[in-house]
Image 1 (cartoon, rainbow, N blue to C red):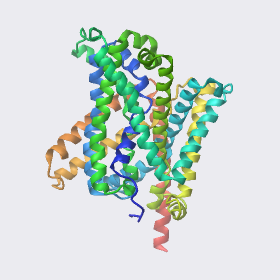
Image 2 (tube, rainbow, N blue to C red; image 1 turned 30 degrees about the horizontal axis):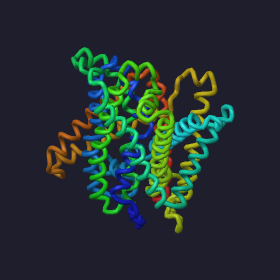
Image 3 (tube, rainbow, N blue to C red; image 1 turned 90 degrees about the vertical axis):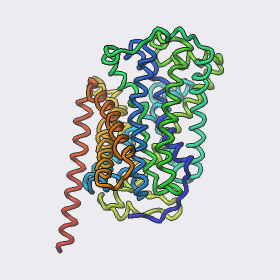
Image 4 (cartoon, rainbow, N blue to C red; image 1 turned 30 degrees about the vertical axis):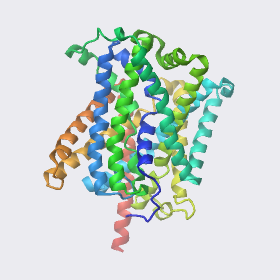
Length: 453
C-alpha cells in the first residue's frame, strides 16, 4: 500500500494546512451570525465557539491516535480501513473525492473571487467576472501544486501568518482599547443556551477543514510524530484566535452594531483602526487568507482520486495510481479532481442564476459537512474500540477524548440537521454514497470473476 514517495512536508506545513484551511473567510464574517443567534450575548457567543471547537480539539487528539498507527497514503481512508474495513474506507474516500474536497474547493475559490471584486470592482465585467476569476484562481492553485510543491508549501505557510495578522490586531486592539461595558451585563443561563443552539450552524463552517492534513500524511517527514502534533496544536491555536477575535471586535464596535452591519462589521472594525487605506489592506489580507484555504484544499483535492486508485477502487485504477516521474503526482487524479471541482462550481452557478434551483437555497459549502461528521464520529468510536481491546493503554486519550469529540460532532450534526434545507443535503449525500456503493459492488464483482477465472 505504501508508495516510496519523497517526504517533502514538515511539521510547519502540517500546521499551516490545518490552520490555513480552517481559518479562511468564515470567522471574518461570522461574528454577526453568532450574535444574531445568541441575541447579542457575547458570553454565549464565546460558549458556542468553545462548544464548536470541541469537535476539532478532542477530535484532533483522537485522530492523532490513528496518525500514530499508520502513515499510509490516504489519511482518513487508511484510518477508516483499520477501523471498520475496506467498504467503510471506500465510502469515506468516495465522499471525499466526489463531494467534500471538490465542493469546498469550488465554493472557497468563488468566495476569494467575490472578495477580490469587492476590492477591484472593475473586474466584475458585468456578472461574468466573478465566475472567470473563480476559474483563474482554481487554475492558478492547481498549476502551483502541480509544478512546484515547494512553492505551494511556502504560500500555504505564508498565508497562515498573513491571515492571523488582521484577526490578532482586531483582537488585541479591541480587548485593550474597546468598551468593556459592551459585555459586562451579559450572562449565561439554561434558557439562553437553549435559544442559542442555532449559532452552532454559524460556527460549523468556520471550524471545518481540520482533517485535511492527514491527506498528505504519506508526504510528511516523520509523519507519525509530526501529524499527531499538528492535529493537537492547530485546534488549540484556532480556538484561541477565534475567541480573541470575537471578543475583540465585540468590544471595539459593540454587539448591536455588529448585528446591524452584518458581514461589513469586519470592514468597520478595520476602518476604525486604520482608516480607509488600512481597511483595504485588511481586505487584501482576507483575500490572501481565503486563497490559502483554496490552496490547502487543492493539495488534498488533487490526491483524492489517487488514494482510491491505490486501492484499486476506481475504473482504470492502474493508470490513475501511476505517479508522474517529474511532478511526483498522479496527473489523471489531478484531471479528474479538476473536472469534479468545475462540476460543483457549475452547480453553484445554477443555484444562484436559475430561479427554480435558487428557491431551494442550496449552499454547496454545507452539503459535505453533515456526512463527514458522521464519518468522524465513527472513527472516534473506532479509537474507543481499540482502547477496549487493550491496543491503546491511555484511557484519557482512548476513551474520554473520543467521547468528548463525539459530543462535539453531535452538536454540529444537530445544527446541520435542524437547518431549514437539511433534507436536501441529506438526500444528495445519500445518493452520492449509494452511487459509490454501487461502483464498489461492480468493481468487487469484476475482481471476484477475475480471481475465479
